[in-house]
Amino acid sequence: MLNHTKVFIKNQIIRFLQSYFVDSINIMAQKTIVILGGGIGGIVTARELRKHLGTQHRIILVDKNAYHTFQPSYLWLVVGWRTHAAITKPYSAIEKYGIEIFQAAVQNIYPEHRKVETENGTLKYDYLVIALGADSDSQIIPGLDNTVNSFYTFEEAVELSKIIPVFSGGTIAIVVTSDNYKYPPAPYDAGFLLASFYAKRGITNVKIKIYTPEKQPLEFIGPENSHTLEMLLKTHGIELFTDHKLTTVESSTKTLTFANSIKTNYDLLITIPACSPLKLLTNSKLTTNSGWIEVDKYNMRTSDQNIYALGDNTRIEFDRGILLPKAGIFANNQAEIVAYNIAHEIMGNTQRKAFSGYGFFFIETGNSRAVNIHGNFFTKQSQSLTMNEPNVTFHWGKVVLERYWLWRWL
Ligand SMILES: Cc1cc2nc3c(=O)[nH]c(=O)nc-3n(C[C@H](O)[C@H](O)[C@H](O)COP(=O)(O)OP(=O)(O)OC[C@H]3O[C@@H](n4cnc5c(N)ncnc54)[C@H](O)[C@@H]3O)c2cc1C
Image (cartoon, rainbow, N blue to C red):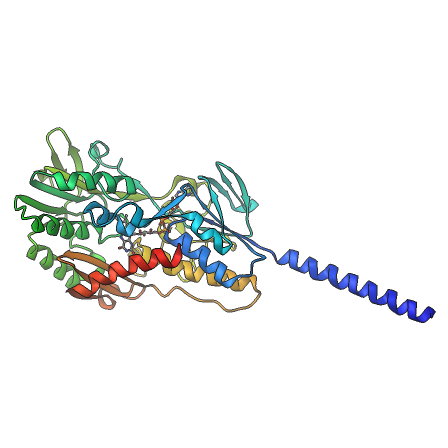
């Protein structure tokens, strides 16, 4: 009998110890991943993390807004192809996947304390993913801030969508104000779309002129592709002025002055703003002098082992000194890699993936056609990027991609 009791007590102790340690292990295993920014990169990171990770881990997505708007559709908003509702979705739509939405403006990141300060409180993390995008900078050129018509923010695109249909004719100057701007094909997209917009309405007194500081349009696609783009612009009646670096804007006389001393007039000015890094990042010690976050180009890890950064707030340089363009396709692809690698590290295995550098762009050329430029941006670009002639399939490819993206991720 005494022996029986001893065995019983022993078993109870073992059970207690087992349950205690298993619980402790589970508690230790619970991780909190905080994602800053609910743009293309942030949303994909959150959804992919949830796909790979068990529900005991917390995924918190922080954005200053309650809604996501899909930037690649802004130009379609300008020409009336899209409404606000068609390209906007609330972040609350992804709460059902077990992603916590924290609406607040991020103010500071403290890597040494693994915490982030926001206007609505402090968040602690085990892993941090920074996907806060880039700011526009219209201050760099005297006179520019008074005259801005652009389509790089949602509000600007809405404003421009009111001006375009009532423009009474004359010269539309689309001016690239810096070498450093988001989504390099956008000025050409804009030129083609506006030319087609007015042509369809039989309006013939609108002249579209594109000014860029580049020696050739989209230099990074290589001289041959660049030349093809030049020819396409010409065929559509769009005048291109390369090697034109804007120095001042005189809005009272509607005059532009360029570094080559050329002056010209416009009736409607549309600017492509320079992009600049978010100021809050510089305090985090994660950036270099450039203000952008430096990451390993294959896994997007920063100098801090528990912090990753992706998309527009990073700076990725190639061997030839060329920077990876700031584009949603890269933010999306990098996010999938980052989520996979964080999840597998948490799960304690060694499986990892690397970002390949593959990407593609569509450029609308009007009449329901688009060109497609695709290839691996990490290899010698002029040789690795292919540019296909404008066709209907690429135009519809872009439409389907937009619809798919908003349906798939939000
Ligand atoms: C007109 C236009 C057309 C484009 N077309 C294409 C295209 O056809 N194909 C393509 O690949 N790319 C395109 N792009 C580029 C693409 O949209 C961006 O490269 C992409 O959105 C970058 O993703 P991201 O996650 O790095 O940043 P973003 O998508 O910009 O997201 C950043 C997020 O951070 C949030 N945020 C910023 N600061 C704070 C803060 N302090 N606190 C909290 N939240 C904050 C913002 O609200 C935003 O939701 C286009 C861009 C523009 C402007």
